[in-house]
Length: 344
Image (cartoon, rainbow, N blue to C red):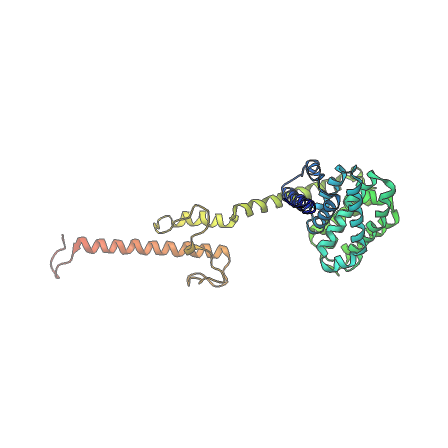
C-alpha cells in the first residue's frame, strides 16, 4: 500500500497528464473548426487551478489557436476565482518579460499579444476594476509590434488585431488609436519593409474602419463592393490551393496527361498509374533528369509538349513506313532484267 503522500502525488500527476491530453485534443480540433470550449472547460475544471493556468500559459505562447481558446475557457470558468487569478498573474508576468519573449521568438510574442487582446474583454466582464490592469500592457504590446523593428508577420498580427478590436481600443484610448492609424499609414507608404498583399489588406481595412467610426455599414457602396470581391477572390484562391494540395496533382499535370494520352495512345508500353501521376519516362524534365535531344534547351512547357507530340508522330510514321516496306519485301520478288515480277 502506498503512503498517503505518494498517493496524492500520483493523483496530481495523473490529473496533469489528463489535462495535457485534453489541451492537445483542443489544439488539434481547433485546426478543423470551432471548438466546444464549454465542454472542455467542464472536463478540466477538476484539475488543480495552478496546473490549468500553467498549461494554458504554455499553449497560448506556442499555439496561435489558443489565443481564442484560452479566453473562452476562462469565460466558462469565470466563477473559479483561483483559475482566472492565476491566468491573470501569468499574463502580467509575460508582459514584464515581453522584450525577452520577443527576442527569443517573434511568433511567440505575437501569440501572447493575440491572447492578451482576446482576454481583455473577458476580464472586463468578470471584473471591470480587475481588467484595468491589462489596458496599458495591451497598448504597449501593440505599439511594440508596429514600431519596434517590425517584420511582415508583426504587421499582419498588428493589422488583424487593430481591425478586429479597434472599436474597443478607441473607447479605451482614442489618442493611442490615432497613433496606431498613423503606424498603418506609415508602413503602407514606406519602402523600408516589404509587406505581403494580405498584410497590406488588413492594414487598409483597419484604416477604413477607423475613418468610418468602426462601422462597416457606413462604408460607401464602392468600398463595400471592392471588399466583398476581394474577399471572395481570396477565399476562392485558398480553396483552390487546398484542393490541389489534397489531390497532390496540379492542373497542369492533368493537362499533360490528357494531351499525351490523345497523342500517344498507339504506344502499348505507356501506362498511366491510377493515382494520376506522370509515368517516369514521360515526366517533364527537371534539373535531376536528362532532357531528350529532340527538345530545345530552355524550352517552356508548351514547347516541350509540342516537341514530344512531333517526335512521337514522326516516330510512329517511321514505324509504319518500315512495316510497309517489310510487307512489300515479303510478298513480292523481282526476276532478272527482261523478266516479270511474280508474286509468291
